[in-house]
Length: 447
Image (cartoon, rainbow, N blue to C red):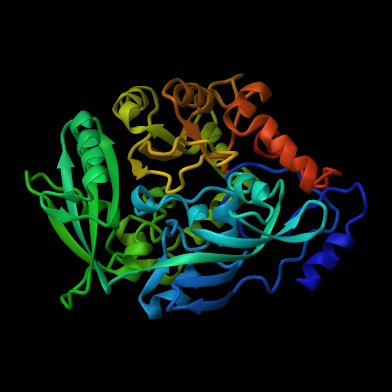
């Protein structure tokens, strides 16, 4: 902490303050700066786990991979564990994380009991939802480092079993899929069997699946999708009844990471010959992300497209939240208009009775996160054409989108979605000199 604060004070007055973070799960370009950065080294661990109180104190740069490794020996995990191993706890809270427990446990920031924040003013304050800098606590989620950086967080944990028993339920109709998803969220079960985890995959308008998980301590055999097996392919089937599978809890939490959902196919990692040669330790999202970063740096993919006489491709990497009642309609629009498949579905409901300042989802309402990550042919002279159309469609369906990737909103529209005057009031208190960029400058302009 002393090193972090000292690095803040070492940045010249008037120069932008940036975090010196080696890894990132953001997919938007940022303006390069040559000034010194904040030094968060040493803030990457778990301070302690309280098994009796079911809490953990965690440093802000700790990855969920390391956090789970610390809590799982006690039969505990965070209430929501985002899908990718190298997402940090601080990153998931100042951004937005989500997973298959979000229909009952909300988003990662809702399990935070208190946190220490290095503000834009260079002060470390302890915040919570009960009177200690509460306005900062409630505005911190979705602020993306524009109000400050979390250095320590105390979070709630929940008990888990040794394994997760899965059912893969196929649907031939999007309305039936969404109706069933809503029924499971309301009842907490499907076909008489409890559900602890719930997400889904849409391959096409007439092939989609819900994946229901139940915590168990079954001693039987488990599947392994960390090598030759590919998880998303395992859920597909033609029969009228659900198929079943069992994973260890550890492997269930990281089931999407091995192939970055299905994005590893872009690197050839799903081809059987390549799969046999690809070292298992490199079958993980962080490796694929580095390959993407290299491509963005050197423009390899665009050069290959040019050699083939094709236009460059537009990256469409987004997660959006749409109200449950509008989800089937949005999916039909998306499948008809955007040539990307599969797409991921993950229901969520806020645990809190109050909306959060910068991502005002309505308490008591079920939303469905729709995730899609690929590229489409670029439209010459219209940068971001498909992303802009998606933004308009999400707004038309009453939804929001996460800000970890490119955004193209004009400023008035942006602030109508993400906090507006409430954000400016918190910003004025905790970053009065504007040492950190504001949220619009960072999310849209790439500051």
